[in-house]
Image (cartoon, rainbow, N blue to C red; front, top):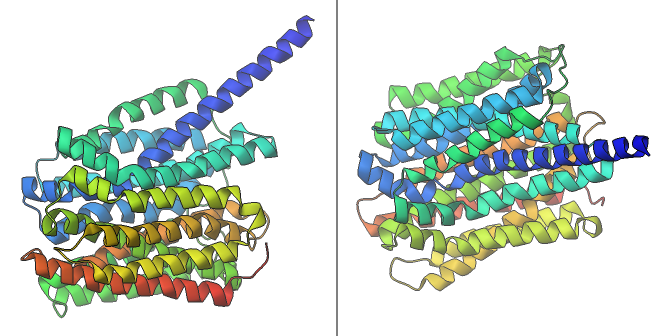
Amino acid sequence: MAHTLTETQMAQATKKTQALTLVIVCVGYFMVVLDTTIVNVALPAIQSNLGASVSELQWIVDGYVLAFACLLLTAGALGDRFGARQVFLLGIALFTAASILCGEAPTIAIMIVARIIQGIGAALIIPATLALVNEAYPDSKARARAVSIWGAIASLGLAVGPLVGGILVDTLGWRSIFMVNIPFGIAGIVVAWRFIRPSTRVKESSLDLGAQFMAIITLAALTAAFIEGKTLGWNSPFILGAFIVSLAGLVVFLLLEHRAPAPMLPLKLFANPTFTATNVAGLLLNFGFYGQIFILSLFFQQARGLSSLETGLAFLPLAGSTSLASALIGRFASHTSPRLAITCGLLLSGIGSLGLLFTTTAGSLLLTECFLFLIGSGVGLAGPQLITAMLLHTPQGRAGIAGGVLNAARQTGGALGVALLGIFISQDHPALLINGLHIAAVIAGAAFLAGWAITVRYVTREQ
């Protein structure tokens, strides 16, 4: 009897640890995803308070996303070498400290630096959260349910970001969108330190620092060229030099990865057409999605005169349809081909983006909201199934690195979307802003439709 009681107590303790682990990693994941979109509705307030230019607003968004994208793969290797729990604690501590710095930033330069630090913390958090879930749930069925919950958090954070941001900016001011992270970050550190066991370490895990450095140089130079080109002139020495550095960095990166015994980005994975196609489609998906959120945030507030809260509410069709479509495709995933969901999703988002050509500064917002609903529905359908399709064509034992590659590709697309589409924004007059929105809509729509065409051509039909 005593023996049975001991086993029961052990089972209960295990379930408690599992539940706490899942809750805390989901909180960390939610914070990271929330901060990719919550800042957008605060941009006009930040611009007014700190005297920022449009290019500086782009850096506020892209500083975070770039650091996040560049360091995801290395963060996964750090988790293997030093333990997922330790890297998670470091990431959430760094993210929380950077949030404080963002909330107290007296100048736009400090704000941008703080956002980059936030992005570094985010990159450390994400791979560690999935690793911790895998360690906490040895049973495959229980692990699958936990991973589903973990994945759903991404859609939720993405969806509620603009609305939460709008409420906070209108009630407590723009600095509150960063300060809201502090209690969650502190709770995450305390609970993780107290209840999550130290993780297994893989000492032979390679960090591939040379390739990591070149990845940062490549993406940072390319983003800088797009963001600053309009201000400095496209033929200025700095911009031309940035494009050259980016191209050279890419060549060196590929050479390093080709020769590395344990590459950060295994190029052999791209020999499979479906693997390559899903990563390109993921990049194009986020390119259109994040780029348009950035521009629409400025359009709603500066061309339509909406408040921060009203802007958050204006994003509800986009946010709600993203969450709803993600939930529905998750429920019926076992009966639906990933290829079908991806192609339908990208097509819907493409149609919705091109529909924004009918948006005006004086017309009814209802039509705009309908097109935002289409864009969100498409992203919600395609996003989760990209990783499903990719994993079907990933060699056994490479799922972790493959997931990291797709995440990095999507975040890179988001950074480039904000950088490139932001070129067409002019705040001198509402008519100029709407012209920029229309140009961005065409480019984003073309990106979605290009992703659709690539998926139709290269992603297989298997279930």
